[in-house]
Length: 139
Image 1 (cartoon, rainbow, N blue to C red):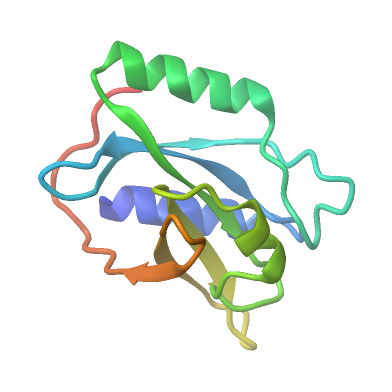
Image 2 (image 1 turned 90 degrees about the vertical axis):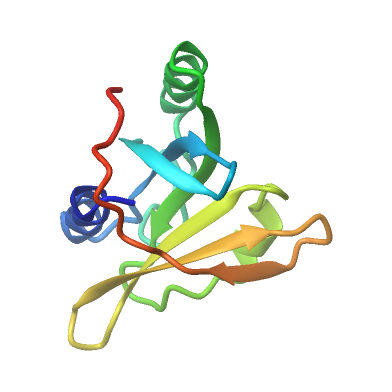
């Protein structure tokens, strides 16, 4: 992820008391690389504690990825009052093979990111977020 993309996620998470969410577009080979971040709308009836990504964002992300030879590699969401560890709800809703970036909040109100890859058995394995200097591809 570029520093600008990381900043985008942190700013979106800081913008309110509801869980922010969106889609990560990029490539999986030779390593997982986020090349675009698309913010979504949280349609969950309890958005302060859960998220439900709107279908329009998912469809748009799929179209962008296909048109540019990339793919949806994962999703992100925030925990406005919690850590960046996957919750039980996160574990139940996770898609195996996809990246999940969670934006956590410290007791002091600082935001931070953790990335996870979901295995076929539903296990979450941490990933290193390495800021890249590559320019993001157009959306």
